[in-house]
Length: 211
Image 1 (cartoon, rainbow, N blue to C red):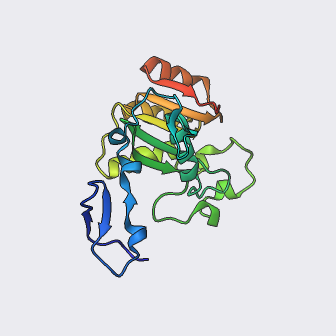
Image 2: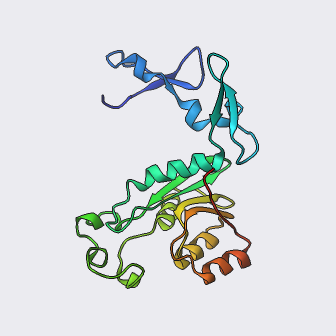
Image 3: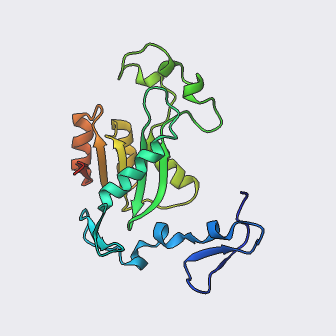
């Protein structure tokens, strides 16, 4: 299926996009945009990190993920785009419970992917954590911040979700970007200077633990 082309609001719902091209499968065009982009309009503004409960068809209780789980699960999907041959990492920048930028690790725009031999350090035999100054891959947090800047999106007062704990360089970028909270899942070379910098700068940093 090609691009949806021009879209119009459905008369039955202002949040559903319907294509004007009748040659396309109409059933596939009734996209529930509200589910992805308008949680506030759907009554999803419950307390943070509290699993939401709803009643499914048939009267049975239905568990929905809390916000931390929701964003971290998305981050792991974004990480699958990472092209670093050592590990795949991702970061999301979230503001008012909306994802405003994503980033994954890999070589710079317009260059050979790391997994295709683009980074000599990653494709060599350097031990984990060594010769990082020779690595040309950009980190996920760095790419998320730069991607927001590239598109003119402010990240001040936002939260950053990352699948791995930030390095010292990314810690400095996060602080200078005005991000106020960092949530990470797995820990990787999370140095004492990085922790101390977050604390001194007043940036909340916490580890996400799955329930």
